[in-house]
Image (cartoon, rainbow, N blue to C red; front, side, top):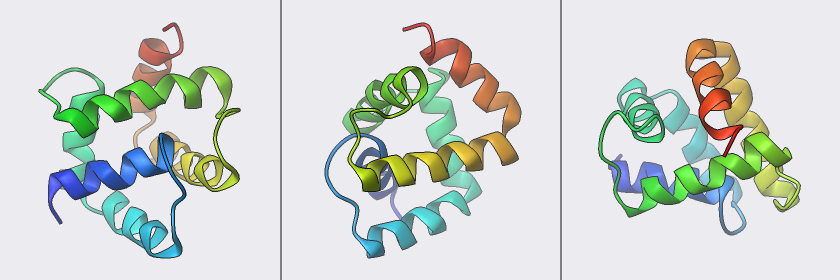
Length: 105
């Protein structure tokens, strides 16, 4: 799966639009793809360049971290919770860095 598609799904999860069941399945596949996850982590931690979709993802993180996704649709909130649970469980050190970085924005 292309990085642009990965970012698009993650942006849908956190930032804009409803996520269809098929997109939720794509999210599951993305979260199991270490290469894509690593690229997105490097992007949001500003350790590698991001494309436009990566920048949108970075812009969505404060909503999730600071406001607990209060302005998200129910589907966005559910998928954001899935993503945060994934990061907290599999990448706790990355989650701690994201909290420090985006919690104070």
